[in-house]
Image (tube, rainbow, N blue to C red; front, side):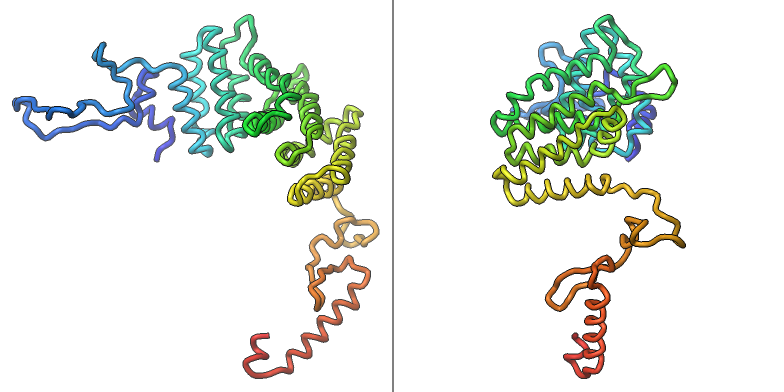
Length: 349
């Protein structure tokens, strides 16, 4: 399957034809002079088309039709983002020429990014690209400003949503994860030349996580864990740089929940692993001491690549274990013992 860009260019399809890319082409082997024959009760036109019986022609597609077509393509073929995004943006620039249409475009992309599973990352990348390449910029705000205004609507309803029914919470969680992706991918130009992250989202993410922890049911805790696994290292660095102890306070809240809350066993394990992940600097390996000078005392990763062994009763241990030598010798002694065994049972062991 060729990419969307090539497919559209080869067929020279104009914007008004976007909604009909998948409509089958009818063919016939009948003679042109043959009389028309249509069995009674048979519809000449296939279902799910835009054919208007009263007008007698296929209706013009809307902006929603085109956006749905494009986002559906990116959702099913995320690897085509780089090759197709320039063409897609060009189509948006040719269509979106009023403030009303720009607001509609923002709403469509926001809705798709928070409704389609696993589309949050691609949606955030799309928002970042459009924020720099969409030409229309009315007085109400450009694409990025209108997008952030739309995100603020859900943000202001967070305290109600975390205590809502399952569907309301699910909608909030999708929004939270999309906002995390948006913080990681949305670039704002600065006077110094290099792009910055949208700092307004930094405070919003902190407030959202506190709201989730204020109502520590399993679904809310799982969402908070996913968000911190996604953005934890970046948020931690940003808060440390600005001198704010937000991450320490979030970890303390998790530890309090582990002691007091009645979350399920699986969620408790997720929270414990998250605390461990943060204690290891989010899994980032820092520059270790030179190999010739590395010791267990000066290199925290000294035992990182050592294999894990198991004692006779199944207890795991590594070279970092104080009783490593003794336990390892026991394994060697057992191997020597079994190496003397012969016959079928010895081979199986």
